Length: 108
Length: 108
DNA sequence: CGTGTAAGGAATTCTGACACG
DNA sequence: CGTGTAAGGAATTCTGACACG
Image (cartoon, rainbow over all chains, first blue to last red; front, side, top):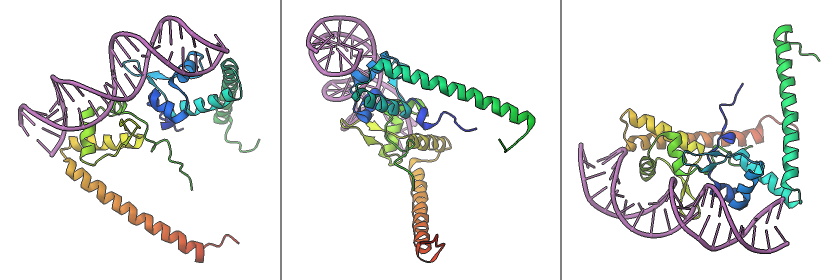
């Protein structure tokens, strides 16, 4: 319907800028990647590149960490949320197919 | 109304990435700045930082240049557009004030 | 576990300048 | 005018490792 990979998702920000934006050290940012909390892309020569969405995730992670939540638990929660989204995604897809065949019933 | 400086306007992209995104050389990008076609911010240590909007402007500039338009003319046109926008901005502001006093009373 | 730091190298960016046209 | 390039320096980023706790 929309998206051509929006500004929010494009991976164009270097780790130094992400560090400024989030207040996290580069060490922390790289560690959260190691723990699979964040997934930067790489430039041709291997430099990490982040999106605004990544920056927001990192700020959420920082808040969780301050509350003493461990990276492992943060990852668990992320995966749970993701699976839930996927289920809803499939549900929506199905709803779309049904509508396509049996018509636009606005009622429910 | 909205805007907290949206993703599109935030200056976070380094010149190398802008170069990849636009296909322009760093030399060209710096030169267009010298000619006042583009206005990056600077990081604490002096590195240029661009927004997605800047990237789009650069692509427009690249197209104009391919058509043989000189940087001076591109700048002229930019300034003309900007002044027009400012006039419209003032007009809208005025319209808002008039409405606030005499128009559409949403009840009070 | 989460983060700091020193280490060495490679890539990035900056400025001012010369070149060509 | 618009762009390439070599130059030298400073800042950035990368990885793997040791440290502490």
